[in-house]
Image (cartoon, rainbow, N blue to C red):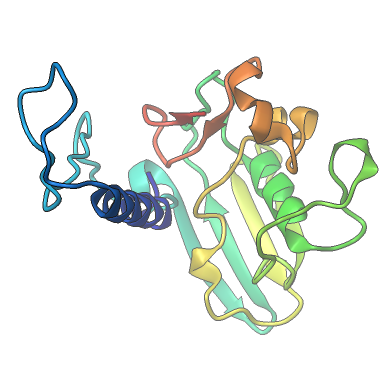
Length: 195
């Protein structure tokens, strides 16, 4: 899981715990239960193994580098072994799709020609162009105007080969029925998150 994704997950779980504790009381639990509700309890989150690095783009061979400030240029080196859950390589196609979907630029549209509906286009709108090497594992982003928080971009990505078919705006609403399974890339081939 990426650092930003992990923080969002932990914050969501904490909010859920607060809501659950606000709704709970210290009276006896339902029949068949052996205890009472502890409003000071906690949530336990289990990981199969502790990640070696919570930064999506630098874990296990993925790297990014600011190579120029005028114009601002960032180069991403994707791990050649990184794949989505269905075995499709994680590469430049994913960067381009995620940029277009979150840029807010009118020339890029979702399935059916509908405008993309991203939660925010901060930073993505400043990207002027994305190019890639012939093997699609080196991705170069060039900005039309500088974006100081460029490291925050592309921290959580959706698979272009799935999303371009099911749609950015509404595709994840039906993701449980998507074939192949929809996954969110988390930086390592062994930890794509199935939705």
